[in-house]
Length: 267
Image (spheres, rainbow, N blue to C red):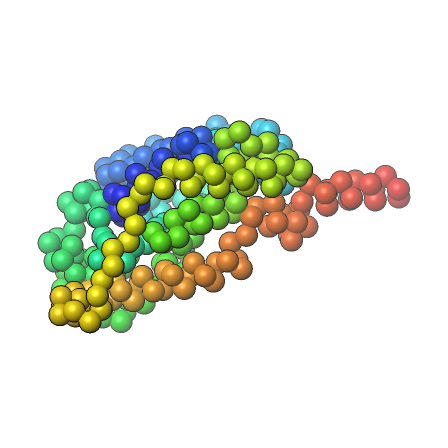
């Protein structure tokens, strides 16, 4: 969560609508401490994340209640908590540069010029001084397309619902059964809409104004990254599908396992 407004809204949805357990790593020091303590491996060993957490309740097709979510504005550092043994998948919200509301701990980390122009390109490429070019823009595009599930401020409700379905989170008050899917979805959508209804929307910019021309010239790369985030959101309509459907397509659904058992008994 690079922006304060997104952080506040998203955490409210996670805790209220999904009863999530948040691990908040708001500073680089927090992330470094988590590394020293082998946070992710410890959580796996305690069955708080991973297959152990899924098998506790045995909900339909791997769904889970009260998920544990690691939240941090430091995307590069937090990503290093995960490994080949313990994978993670990041979701992140992207804003138009004119609406930036940068997290104070990121402001401390980056030099003044990083906050003045193309902040996101500098953050994602880890190049905080000097001129930026196509190489840094390409790194930013790669991070957005390949390493994050993308959400945008203008589609916050739809994004959060998609995230919940993808991870298999059962909303507070939901049942997590095959038969309750529509009801669970309705609960989640209603709760998300209620939480974010008062979140400020995007600002309008007159693209013909002199002020906009100056702003765009200074933040051209970040404007391009925002469009990449929006196109990624649209592309992920096809790829970021619900966890139960992922299980079915992989032949790992609960119904597939029952069929295998029945075939074994017939033999």
